[in-house]
Length: 181
Image (tube, rainbow, N blue to C red):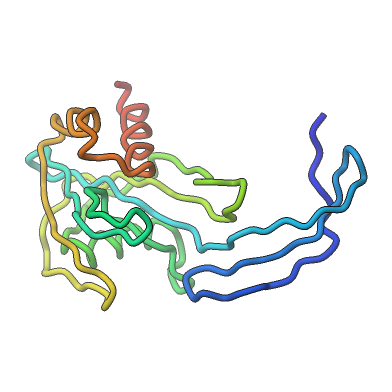
């Protein structure tokens, strides 16, 4: 049976504002060997699949520094410390990035995006009957184009690889399960 590894020591190696790097000394429960490992500690993330009354999905297009390309994705972001829940973060991110609000928001699913090296969870929400309420309120580091697409086109855009962001694919997977598709 697999058991948890004993953490003997934890040291914060670096703080990069959006994430920290921890170095840990751990003991293998199987061999007793002591190893050094690293982990990135991020705040939790949220993604929100917002659907308008016209059955269109509210999406964003933005440049991503990791892949060094413009991505088509769902609105989302970090769960801020002052937010009392991931749902509140999802609602806030949707409004800030797109100007849309939804009368009903519900959890579609959650996961650890990469538990080998990341500490955080990602929460996926469905925002039903999302309507434009205001202009975007972007952070200084954001440059976001809002687009809407018919919900029925979402799968074709995944198949054509126009949508290839892993967390967006997972959001669509959770959506299809929740809708019984």
